[in-house]
Length: 151
Length: 150
Image (tube, rainbow over all chains, first blue to last red; front, side, top):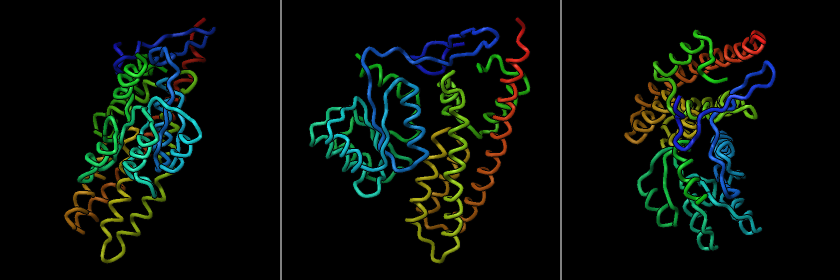
């Protein structure tokens, strides 16, 4: 059965005695140790986005606010990919992205939104994001980006 | 457990969730990501979803009881609900959120009320169906392990 997710290899079946368990689709082995950051105030979204990035082989941290993200960066943390939700409690998603770029962050930054508001895309793009995407963050969409980052 | 090894009744039950338009591709992609280390990722996500959003549903209902409606606030609540619902592929609930939002933008009170009642039904129905599916899937995993020949 062909993998549903581009870039994934088919499932490997491993046998341990009678427990023949499917290992699931495996993400490609990344050459680099990829690091990710999720900035999303919505708890469930944060759990899923972090979970997806992790299962795709990205060592991921998740924070609720733009301020928390900036603290991490100011402390020296570096990331290959950062996903930021449009709506954050005080510092907005675009403001957070802009501050990151001002601090010299060169990571791939993706702006995410659940509902589209007029001007959102322009604001995110002006802030310096690399892409702007409607939720959900999907593995199918993410893996090719990770492959690019890994090259 | 790979879908190829699922008992037929479970395959059919799973397929009906997609045929009825309740779930979309995101659900499939999340299932594909599951492995031995994270065999229950999707079920955990769904459980967290219903825990996290139950209060939000009550808050929206209360907000719809006020007059005049605060459409900006409702928009914000829908942003949260739609984001969460889309995260695991709750297609119908997500669509109801979008429709509700359109009514908000148009200032259509009756449309908001009607759509929210529809949304609540879909939300509850999906919960029942997914709980049943996950329970059967867990039973199938146990049965499959126990009955596998040496």
